[in-house]
Length: 164
Image (cartoon, rainbow, N blue to C red):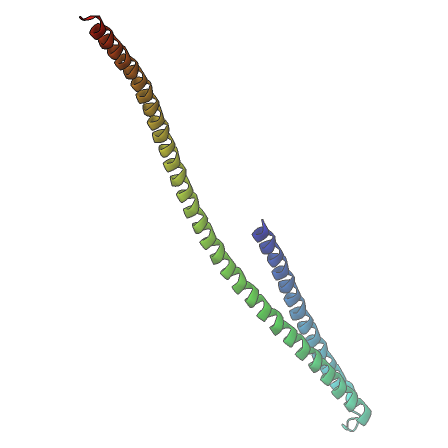
């Protein structure tokens, strides 16, 4: 039962990590699209009539790019970490499944041995009952033979005492 709960919790955790990974990938795609959209729209607006960029707008775009790149890097790191954890959990699942298989085999072997021992015990108990019955028969027979012997001795003594 504990193994079932463990695998159930492991499965839930794995699903959460996969969902988180998908969410992070979607966030990366959105941020890249936003960055690309901002870059294309800002470059169109940054040029003055004579083709020179305004100083304040250029630093603003650079800040936005830097922020977007940082967010993308953070999300990539989180994604890599989540993938690594998924790999670790999958390896744990494989290891635990093989361990369960070994325990199952050992359990089946133990059950076979237990069944064989029970059969041997029943056989020995039958033999014991048979031996006890035979012993009882022999004791009863011995008792009858002792009584007959006593009678014969008594008859012999009586016949010897009657002879002159």
